[in-house]
Amino acid sequence: MDATRILPDLQASLLCEDVRQEANGNFILIGILGFVRVPKIPIKAFRLCLFNRWTAGVGTFTETSRLIAPDGSTELRKGQVRFALKDASHHAINVTVFTQVEFAAAGVYYVEVLVDDVMKLRFPVPVIHQPPPAKPAQGRPPSGDPSSS
Image 1 (spheres, rainbow, N blue to C red):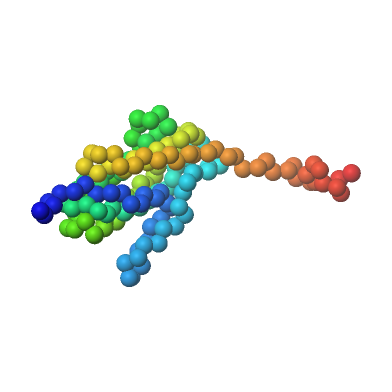
Image 2: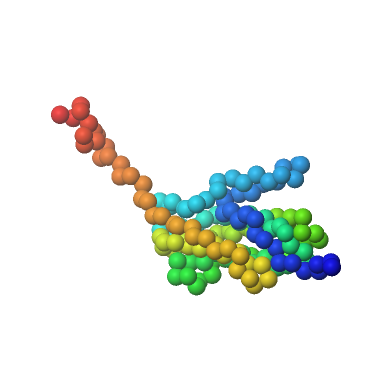
């Protein structure tokens, strides 16, 4: 029996700052993100890349990638791409680029990855607001400095 369609497995999904491809076809992922730390809110991320690798499927599919706000329903960005796997031993790599993403509030955002409207993965991306440290007043040494006593 020859399989004509098998839904693929999502082998890897990584959010990162950039994805580049070498001349030999290998990918380089730059700045893999487990969270996003920002000095102010709101703030815009110039570019976020989602690297997805599919395998163990047969057929033609539609991948949908979404970035969801902390309210759990607001879709900040969405990308779709069609891909095909001719044999279950093959793989497909898709990179979705989300540009000018505005993080309006600190909180837990989510990345969702679907294939043919079937949710394969949903993972959290916490956005943490961490203001820069206060600068000491000019002309005075910072408190706790032994030379100030």
